[in-house]
Length: 303
Image (cartoon, rainbow, N blue to C red):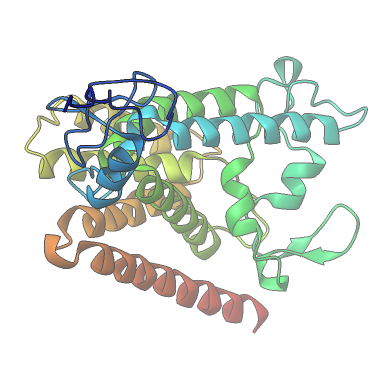
């Protein structure tokens, strides 16, 4: 009695294709279209997907996602600031802010209707004759002010600093933690400006957040055991400018520096075993302190 010839295996996903290659995990036959490179041999698509689900995604030293290496948040913040600058220019219909401010064709300083609407302002009579400011319930100014600038030069200086500092910090912290650091530092600087500036003095700019990034870079780099000797002189120069150049918000810059440093310390020194929880709680505590300070200043101005 003659034996029937052995049948050639066919791909389990494509029955019409003969193959002698098998998945190294499940041993099912797979054709070239279904092969996926593995550390040893080839795997089928299902086994590759199953392996991805069981492998923990790579994290940075501070618990963030490695997508921060691409600098998406840094680039997004810069794009948002540029967009707001364009809107600020457009809001000044027929005014002197052809380039976002007054002097030298709008390059230097000057406000627009948009900066009047969104800058940090304690309590004052607005251009339309109404009473406005944070004390009057316009709390949004504590956020919007960090995306508004008085002129193109003001914008460019802050965006250059953000580009230099932001990419390194985002790569080390991950996108989510870096974004939180930026917003908390900027908010902290604006709260300090609200606390310590004259009630009718308006301030705006990303420099509150940028100064927080300076402090954060020093803390993060020290935690990683890296040399910070090149960062310190740049920070000192910026502090000298802050303290000597008229028109710069000293409370805003110093407030951003302190709050950004505090937030960075929370992110850098949270114990690894419960890192995310400690980082979230630490950030929430900082926000609660800032909220208390805003309530205190508001009661002071309205008394």
